[in-house]
Image 1: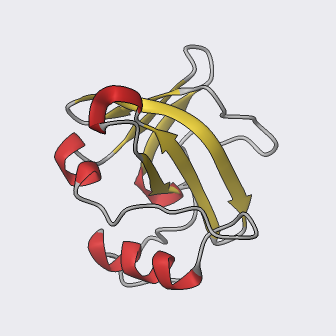
Image 2: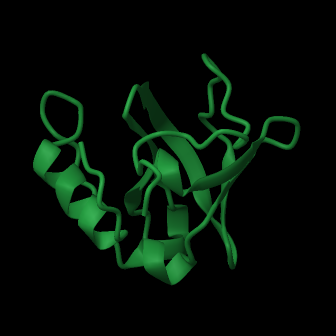
Length: 118
């Protein structure tokens, strides 16, 4: 793929400085949870989604490149992955100090089939 997994695509509705915490997250086949936190670093943007009871309260990391559209009026983020695809992603474990391990980002990029990694 030629788009960057770690950047919001033009036209997605991403707004500089917008707080997405609490937005519902919709996969192509239904709701998967809510945004717990997000990163807006250049070429390192992602959402951490709290799936609640859907997959036993697991948190998943969704790269910004999976976001199709952000609807700020309804507070919904639409992503281009299925619930099963997201469920099967490598487990997200919070790094200490808080952040994301670079090796995890590499693994996640490979899982989602993107060539451009951080």
